[in-house]
Length: 273
Image 1 (cartoon, rainbow, N blue to C red):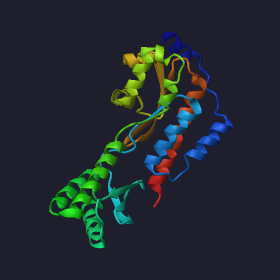
Image 2: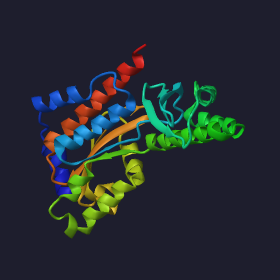
Image 3: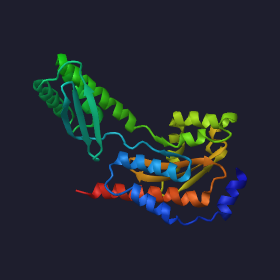
Image 4: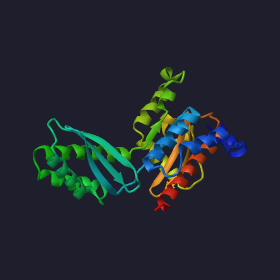
């Protein structure tokens, strides 16, 4: 690790991005993408272009506000729940009920959803909906509970980091013979310590490199991380995880360019009416 660090600090020459990579960034990360979709596509793009693992911090910070709610009939026993937050991200989930859902039930559930959720912080809205649901019965109460379960699941998912490309590590020729690589996969399944590692490192817009044991996390001894911040508030970063001898000259500019495009898109989104 010390030899690689010395080479990077003294001799590393960063290469300009190829036209193919620049085009891929522009096509896959266009302006006006909602935050969640932007994070998903950025992570997938980085993994696809490099053949390595990408990590994107949780798309949402605390306190996101619900802007609009709708409930649409799909069939006699199925409804489509649509929730739009302040960033323009759209949640749509199908709600099932064993018996027929009449128009009166549909209207009542929609009324409760709007009263509890619109203009509210996501978690506060779920709490308000729980209290209102307790005063109902039958199909209305059952559908409110189903909606709450979907809202709670989405809230949890929005605060989890996104990981792409794990399968590429598992397909490495020495994966099944190397317990340390298997530990990396286990770490990616529970990435809390990676978030704790990368958050303080990415406090400015300069890309950072963490080589092997520099991380202080033993399972990462044989890999390196290239990371960059894409948002300051709430804090957001994107990172690439790969072998210690990866092509830093090509990959550092790529991670930086993806982070810069995300930063530009989010600023543009916030300034839009």
